[in-house]
Image 1: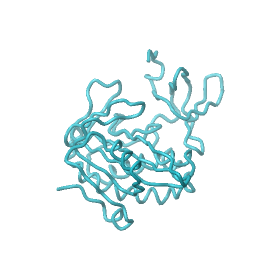
Image 2: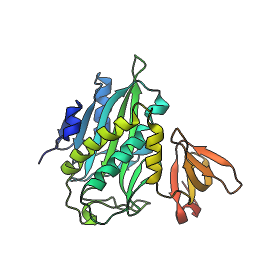
Image 3: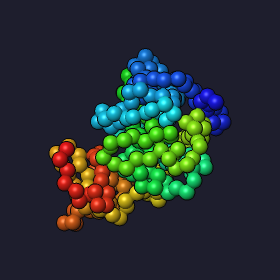
Image 4: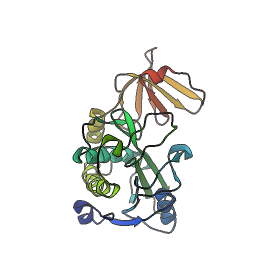
Length: 262
């Protein structure tokens, strides 16, 4: 079975291009933006050879895992377009809930991870470039551990096969593409962000618990209180200060109290 769009995605006019293997679907999408592509188009593969995550970190994608990048154009401001990461997280968690992956607890870790039984199964990376007409071209990259999870990483990781699921990357993508249509309609160019935020918080990992966030030279410790209206992490420090965090590396629970050296 090859990659196909779900029926709702096809009806909505989304396009699809799949690759037997490719270096990075996000890099390919960015290249197409510079060539004038405006989307919406999904670029997908089950064999990504040089993927990357946030801050240029490598994202391992052995054959059988899913790498999918959605290229689309939006006229909303950049700070609103950035909330598409929450749309992606909800869409993937929706897809996993619809598929038979066995007994599993699915949750979301701020800002861009999907967890199964507390271990990372997916990473989400948003990239993009401004256009001359004040619109923004956005790439929503989603990598999912389908048949294998990375080894030697500083966080627990899991794959669908390790959970006993027989779901393929192709099957997962078809469901994901339809779940995206539903959640993107809910988002509604940012006008539905409060509803997206509310649902995301219902699935949030670590809420109410200890958290440490490292952003550049700054490190904030406290309690993960909530998300604000723009999707920023709200941390209540031990001193009672309410700190808003826009980006950073997040550690929950016992890991939040461990010293960081990088």
